[in-house]
Length: 238
Ligand SMILES: Nc1ncnc2c1ncn2[C@@H]1O[C@H](COP(=O)(O)OP(=O)(O)OP(=O)(O)O)[C@@H](O)[C@H]1O
Image 1 (tube, rainbow, N blue to C red):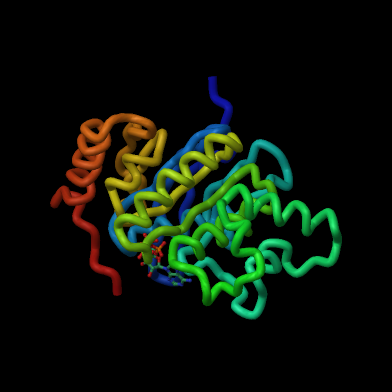
Image 2 (image 1 turned 120 degrees about the vertical axis):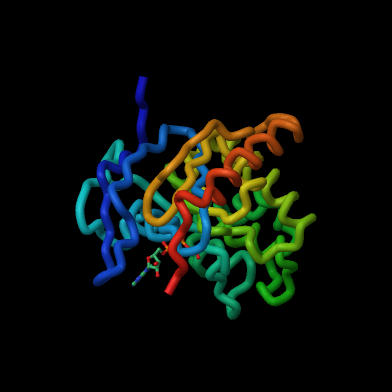
């Protein structure tokens, strides 16, 4: 039985002559972790912006399970405010005691309570990503959109953050859409992996979230083959 939180139906997006998305249809089920993978310029970020309602499709419809669905986006650069402390970044410098208490609890959840008084410049890459995640979680979103959130991290920190995000999403029963170039990351974190190529969702497969390394590697290989398949070669980005 379908329990879709978001449904994309025949989505097209054009920027002038650039046809960024062509007839894309898929849904994201309540509580599901979906990864969108594909080469640069394929249309992943455009899809995320449409789902976040930051832009409108040129054609087609996006339907949400309820009006005013609480959606938050976590971007690669974190969009942190350098002049505010970690706690202020999460509480948006609110002076309301309830908001501050909630911000503190959110910092606890991402393991940053000891850094509440520090400024972002004093945080490591992984800690900055945790802070960005805390900011997104503060709104208690029903839909979490992650736009290449771990791209700037070293391999070890990245692996830790993958496990951490998976755990938080499971604990909070979040519905999550992850955009990544990294097929291994997609396989490891997702319930379902969707390949986006030249503006189309050309393939999807079951992810290997919570499965052994061999299964993760098998799914990653399967996805990589689709991305690299020459008959669907991606036109180079202008
Ligand atoms: N605001 C815009 N104006 C014009 N063209 C755009 C705009 N945003 C995206 N595009 C174009 O749409 C296409 C898809 O871009 P998009 O950023 O969605 O791809 P992507 O798969 O997310 O790539 P990357 O992985 O590099 O972020 C590209 O050809 C891009 O140049």
